[in-house]
Length: 357
Image 1 (cartoon, rainbow, N blue to C red):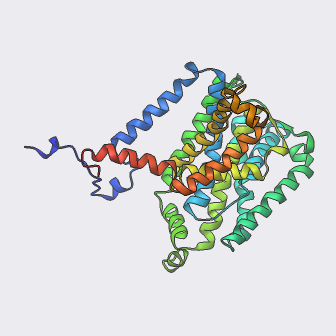
Image 2: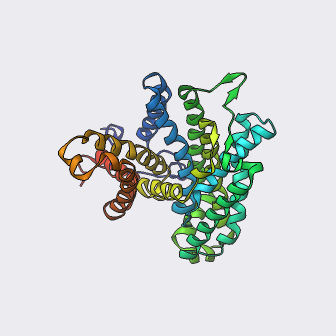
Image 3: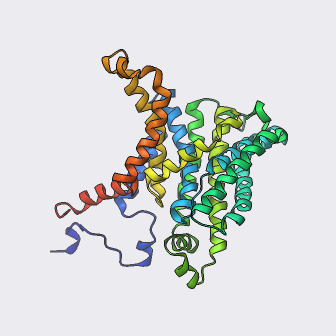
């Protein structure tokens, strides 16, 4: 009997090309392709509310992807990711308003500007680690917040800045259904770029710096170079997500990019899975949908005995915020490897069945 008739139930990789493949197997490829096709037709299947949630998942997922490169892949903690997200939003609005740069060009240009700012902050931050690095990135958060409030020429100050709607060849992407495809395009491009990055020499150097920086340095890896580079790449994707965010709302305000949003991004990569590309998107989806689920549950319990006892209706904003902290704690205790790891375990169980033990 030919061996081709047997279904492999293990992980067989017999060449460098198979080991470096973006997809683990054909099933992963077809599943990803089916997901993209489903997203492509979703504007025809769902209302504007659902599409709006998908858009938020898109640009938050791009920003979380950048943070995961820095924290999950390089081991550099950052609690100031929100300001780079905000810088991208302001930079894209500034380019389109002041220099009349087309929005489709202003978005990637703003991402490059944000990457440059990230490299500047990365130079001093790359010299420290651990708690000192967290304090350094926290300082960057407050420095940039102060810059946003004082640089009225760039951000509009307390009045904020308007952002032009997306337009390509006189076709306006001025509805959720239309703008969704812009976000989907950049989401796919970002995840393909990062997936390929992690299979390159630089990507493996990031992982080496994260796992054991002394061994990486003994192997000839320039720690300073790759730590600074990770800050720049992380800021690039944060700026890209922020630019998409600004042109979606058509307005950018300085109050939005605070420390709370930075913690929100950290929660995404912790819940999705540190160092996982697909985990960034899973974490973004979880964190965007969590407040909606909590809002639905509290409203479902309204005017009940539980509501009268706990006053849930008046505490909806607090419940949404508290749920984020509670979920982070629960994931750190019961699922520290994140949703991506659990999804891999589920796929492995089906792949190895009936020998899944």
